[in-house]
Image (cartoon, rainbow, N blue to C red; front, top):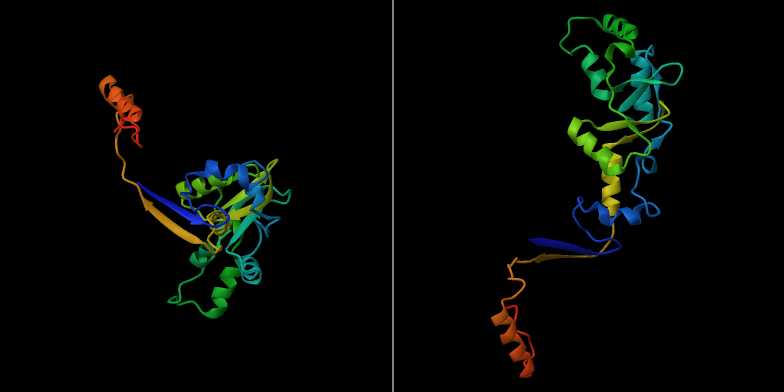
Length: 210
């Protein structure tokens, strides 16, 4: 068994030991996605054009766009690779004008993912991370009362873990290799009696459990 300690603000323990961090992270409560999400994310409607969505991604330097209806309800999501996949190949025989015309007619409802995995704003952060891993996705829209209130990405999760594990703190990292040894307990009456006799003779170490 190998134990790792980092002498810093927090110990560098395995992430699975989250119970140790839960009282520390957010006022005695487990950290929730609302503590790390991006509130009021940039969105577009399902009838927004391809060009508008691509322009927003470049301007805001984002890779994901939640798609909402006019009443604010989430109806889909578009990621950068969806737009790239919808673009004609460089090997196309279409002219520049024809490509531009086709893309101008393309709407988000034609390329968006309609079955979106979401969580509530009170979802524990480690549960959100597990969902991303299980579904192999890079973000989770955050809903409250069926309305989009935020989005959390894999980058947000990584930044949180770096802070928890003291990745930006200077410190000394100690790795201890502990060999497990089975000890018989309780000791047999004969060994216990021998230990007591050693103790009565003034030995420094009680031998009953060796």
